[in-house]
Length: 529
Image (cartoon, rainbow, N blue to C red; front, side):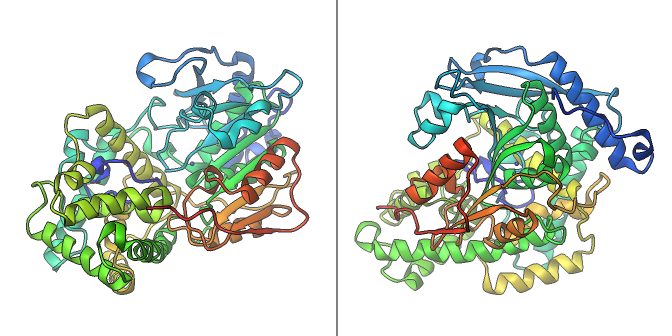
């Protein structure tokens, strides 16, 4: 569920990168009899051991490394966790964490608020910058909480994994994700299988342990290292699945939890079906954006009806397929760039503007926006790492269909009605069909004894995490509250100015109080051209 990168440096080797699609008083180990039951009990015991160690060690906070791009007074440190929780004394990895202290008084402080932005594969290290950049929506919460970010296992500075050479990974143009023939499908299948093999070759030791339950365990160890008895957590996108899994595994360790733009936690949906659901939702939001572009034809000159805007899109796609724009931007790169509009309302105007310039004769703006920049080696390495983690977590978390017939049938059928994203998404996920590590069975997300009210926030027209996911988590977490932003579809609702939502999120994080019933809010302001 990772957001698109700003550049098409996010294009995957399997066609196109799109998003599918985040103790001190509580470390008693389970009894030995429980321990012998099965692996999960061994892992629970391993988590308790690792958390007790981390609580004792704490975090040695220092100024952040200069090349991390985190200004003072943000501080950085490391938390050590086992690679395999069933072997807590085996190989250890270090997770990068950062923090900024609460801006209020000592009396106002309520502990640490830990954040995950999604992915799988997203880094949370920029979260404390909401304080240094004085982000208006977070001023009240920052008075009460230290803002803490982290790179999940495999991500960024936390034992990063890789599946391909980053410079090769971003090269363009890629194959058109929409196949014209069986030969095209065979070529894409070969790329996907090679990508999966590359993950094993470059990161084989990490792959079996790249799971959401392990990230939830890591989160519990981080909580302990911070000296926090209970967890305050804000998860966005895939971060909501981390929240769902953590809340199921550690219900008594939760203090406050916000799940924003929710991955459907149903075992049947993780992850193959969730990605098919996305294709349908992306088409809906793509049309919403086209309607907006048509309404603002006076600004963009791309057509004054949705049909005309779609015709312009098909024309652009056909041109790029025949002759990649600037030699670099083909259909795959176009999808990589244009998908940010269905993702985020903040991308509506910039995406339309680049397109409008292209139609008016300025091709450079489109090349700059959609083509990879081979000189940006750090950005390309980050893109490749993000895609590797995305793939590793989704492929290892759950069993995927291994029959190509099933993939072919499902995606051929979906593509007829939902062509914008379907095949691109299929190729992104196809490495899971030949995944070299053992695939797990997803956790049954449910309410454990002691779980406090969880606040769920969701827009009805979200493309990346369809609305049904929020309804499902709400059903599974008893006592949770659902805030619905109606007739809106930007991904990541808590970051948008909408007082109906912002005030309730503040109230919950500051007091723990939720409304007596679920709430429906009017949409935030529509973007202006």
